[in-house]
Length: 419
Image 1: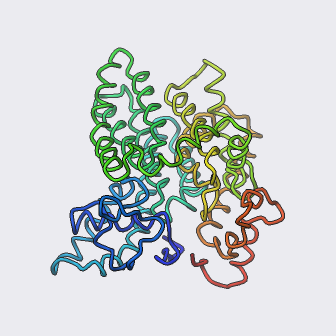
Image 2: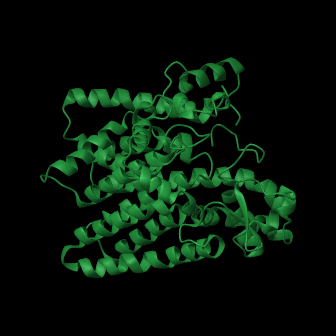
Image 3: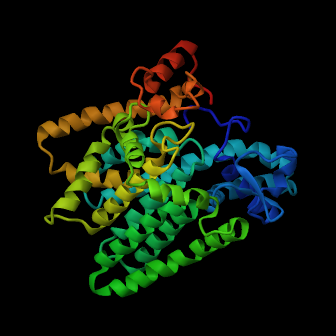
């Protein structure tokens, strides 16, 4: 919240339906955007489709549902004097989106800390929570507006907290399934994370694996069924609008183009995870260790680590792997909780010199996310991307976005660059 900025409707895109649908649900009992037709005008913007006679979001229903607990008290206040108008709700949705994104992300960091205090001494757990909250895209991306990644990352963090509960009681297995079902309702590709959670629950439950698996699936089923029904009704497919990209992505996963996209999400200067969050190298090494050794293997990290690798390959195979107008590798925000938990698992195995380097990497990571929160997009970097070959800009060291935004922000003399 410290940058004191929100995203104006005229400059927004992907997240605009997510900021409005909670008010549609509360005020009009609908998951469509029909109540706001007048505010948009006669023609819907590109992120809204007309289906079955209604205006519906291009994206799944999960993110608006996750924002409902934040919107409910706002709506209750507005409705105290009578039913609020669509015009008022449309205006209030802009700051409400920012508050919802910030609170959901803060809750995710709290869940992460609760997970770590079972595994690390309190001081180490505190600093890893700081690293997760301020040194990754949880700050510069997830906490700023209601991206789908905001909700998926929070859902995964909550699931990791529950699935690592000592002894894995039935309610914890059910909670993990419910949390990951919200991730699936938000992004169908999160089905990989749901499967990883189920495998982890079975492995952690041991003799009680069948009961825990049933609890996990039973808790996950209602929200997934609701999301699938909404997608099917309006788009004729369980994955909704994403069905248009599914075939092309699956064909490109193991092609040179798909692998190049995955590499770009890891090392490219203007989208690479190891440029924007170099501390993530600890998580990558830890997950790799889970794959190659049996000593000290963690079933939760192993299953979620494999899901993370598949998520990377799928994201890289997407034609627009760089994530459009966003800061850093937005499509990898989903798996940041997994990388962070894996990094914590590796920490006490590192020699002293590696820990010193990790501290340097953490400082850089926090400074980068500060750039994303306050400096981005001061230089208008995205406006200069050539439409014919945007990939070239992602790999351009001579057009380094972090440096350009920092210089432009410093020159303008304001606390925070506006969107």
